[in-house]
Image (cartoon, rainbow, N blue to C red; front, side, top):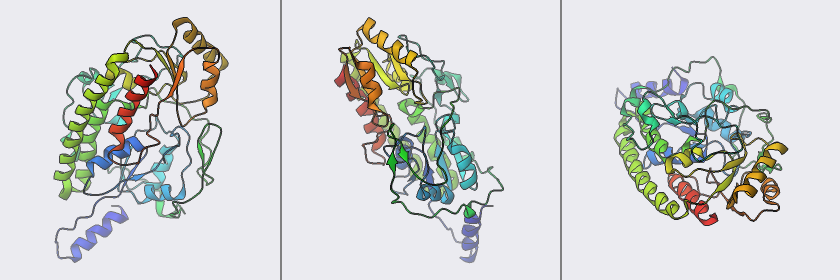
Length: 368
């Protein structure tokens, strides 16, 4: 038993067996997932965000305050190692007592294969996959509720690491520089996550609202397992969140319908879940899904596609170097715009996720 939970048990015993409820401390990797967790915890508690706004999760160095949030966590929600391989060992070390949920591995999650090519055809989207139910490959199907996740809290992370000796203090005000890609350069012992690879599946699965609805129930189940006194609130919030996303899907379709004939190129291949959910395919990506620097040959492929097919729009991202987009656009008549897959300009919290998806559709429609 973890020291945190042992302390709670002893306190409850000293109180004569009276019910003792404490809201779990929760750490979340990126802002869109943090938003979903915050929606489920609405009125009960507030999760901590690990990868701060404006930074790329593909390469990131933890601040001491973020490391401490992991160290203190009872539950951790993250996309998984396919998005942030550098975070795997950190979670195992600092959050060894926590129940850890990798959402890409959750039952019902739609998964798409990682794409390597620079150019996409109209329906060149990797094979769907779903954990526990192949019918989830059709994203129009109803996703079943996951109340059974209340029985699946991952309390099996019994590592021998003593995270209380990690030596991190809690200073949330550290200054951070930015490199040429816009990544935050935090100077602590977690620096140096260059040379990351990627997994078999595209990790940007939060850009599927269908996945977001599934994950709301997964999150509610895990929270309820850790905090049964508030289970009713968690599942009620998850149901309300799913209803809000259903409405959002209708809004996005109405925004995109008038511009479906347009063709666009994205900065990095982060959007195929959005493309699949809304049947709105990109024509290519300057960089692959892990946002590594493209080769000159890949840039030449993209430039040729723009010239040959009269691409309407090339979309940059706030987290990365705009110079690459300028290079690709040179000599073309394509317009440019900004897509932000993380909602870096938005206030973290429960409202971020729907606004993020809404902003993607508005940016696409405005550029096309």
